[in-house]
Every structure is written in C-alpha cells, then in structure tokens.
Picture: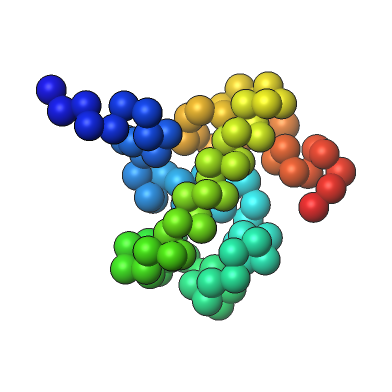
Length: 101
C-alpha cells in the first residue's frame, strides 16, 4: 500500500471538492475578494476555475490554504461537516454566523 502522505491534510481531497466547498462557504464574490484571481471575479464557474488552478501553482496554493483555514475554523467552532466535502447544512456559513466578514 502506498501511504506516502499520511499526514497531508489534503491527501485524497480533489481540487474540485475543495473549490465546491469554498464556493458554498463564501460564494463567488467573497471568494474573489479573498483570493483576487480573474477566474473568481469575471464570469466565474467551477470548470473555468479548475482549468486555471490546475495550471497555476501559486493560485492553487492560495485556494488550498483558504480551504485548510476554513475547515480548521469549522473544527474549532464545532461545525459538524468540517472534515467532509459536503454542502453546508441549513445553518449557513460560519462566516455569516460570526457577524464579521
């Protein structure tokens, strides 16, 4: 068995799942504000963003860092879906609940 990345928190998580989580959590506008990338700010879509992120290491790194920060925040605050890639529950975004942007 190949277990070359047992401590990598992103191991086994697809870029598409990461992006879908972030879009569900922030929406395109807030995501584009946090990571100023053209594909998030001008006619955004999952497919166009994936195409860009797969070619651009620095942008993918920023997306992965935001994802790790977001799930870490969720875990610290007891959010049930923190370690899954499912859509957020009906309680909404942790960012909306905190009262801060």
